[in-house]
Structures are given as structure tokens and as C-alpha cells.
Length: 112
Length: 112
DNA sequence: AAAAAGGTCAACCAATCGGTTGAATATGCC
DNA sequence: GGCATATTCAACCGATTGGTTGACCTTTTT
Image (cartoon, rainbow over all chains, first blue to last red; front, top):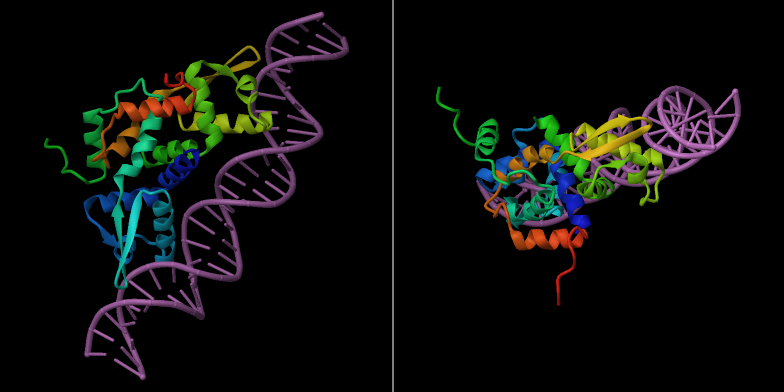
């Protein structure tokens, strides 16, 4: 269990990997497509995906020559629960959540 | 913001640092007392505390020659919210939370 | 004043990390 | 069969990490 918290938090600590997770939030993707928006090599992205898969944050399934990457949001549950054990904080702050989603361009900008 | 998520998740990725946070959940502690249960040097613990402080997870206040360490649970909020953006998962699973707390000896074992 | 206690600093070390490149391995297409 | 596509592997590199030790500074105690 400590080991899994290690791998999950380590995986989440890198901005490239968090960006990949955000991308996968919209749809499953092939490795090459995941790599496309980044400046780094395909091999580097492949390694990041392996770290995410080891942490259980994504799953990868090979169909033909294409390896599909799929978000596994359930794997965040344990880490989320661990964090909540420190929580005199509201587990769901809708305003803050909205801001985060907007920052990630997952929802449209606020009307002015 | 990305930078802060980096520092928070990086800080949480180390088991020693998570253990320190758990200890501070019970009460504020001096650096020496934080170090006591661990096998490593005081200097090593001092570094870990610095990482936690940089992430905003704890605050440190020096009174006399003693530096007191205090948990700052609010700093987990942003990371928690980020994680919830992936959440088709229940943000508060009480049974799971209870198990986690028990594993950390923060609440007594279940009656049998 | 001298000694003890609480912490940090600086230098060092081995291991890990995040990246690169080039070769290798499958798979799909003509 | 032969070429292009999708992905990983292996070796390498510099930077960071997690730890050590010994010296140092500050504060309290005697």
C-alpha cells in the first residue's frame, strides 16, 4: 500500500505525466498521438506512459500495432483517500474545481 | 500552479515524508522529536521537513532554540481538487477512509 | 564561562530520473 | 517480399534525490 502510494504520487509529480492524464480524460489515445503535442521524443513519452501504467493510472492495450492508452481514474481513489485523512478541508469545493477545469481547458472560459 | 502541484506531489511521493505528515496530524512537533522514530540522521529529516515546507504542507516556527513543525492541511486542497477532476470516483468513501486511518494507526482496530 | 541541546550547512556519494539517440521488433499495406 | 508505421529497447548523459558525516551557529542550562 505504501508502495502504491509511492508510485501514484511519483507519477503525478511530473507535469508531462499530468498533462498526459488530462489528455486521456477526453478520450483513449494511441502512444504516437499522446506524444504528438510534446516536444520530446516518442521514447520519452513511452517511458512516461510506462510510469503511469505502473502506478495504475492508465491501462494500455495493444490492438494490432497500435497500443491504446486509457485513463484509469479509480486508481486515484486510494491516494485521494489518503489525502482526505488530513482533511479538515472540504472534499469537494465546486468553485475551485471549476477553476482548475477551466485552467486545463476542459470547460469553456467564464462569461464576462 | 503547475509548479505547486509539482512540489506537493513530489513531497507526497516519499514514504518518510508521508509518515512525518501522519505524525504531525496528531500534534505539532519539534524537529528532533520528528526525527526520533526514524533510523536516519537528523540532517536527513531536516531536509525532508524543508521539502514539506516548500510544498506548503507544513509550516515551521522557531521559538527559542526549538523549531516547531505544524501540519498545513489546506495545502492539500489544490492537489485534491486536481485529482477530483479525474473523478468518476466518489470523493469521499467512508469505509475506505476508515481502513486507511486504521492502517496508519490513527484510529483503533476494528472490534471483532 | 563552559557545556549541552536543537538545528542547519556544506561537501560528498550512490542511485534514480528525465531525456537523448540508434537499433530492434512487430504489425500492416502495396 | 519489401517498405512504412507503431512502439520499445539499450546505452548513454547530466541533473536531481536521499542519504551520510563533520563543522558550525544559536539558545538554554549549569
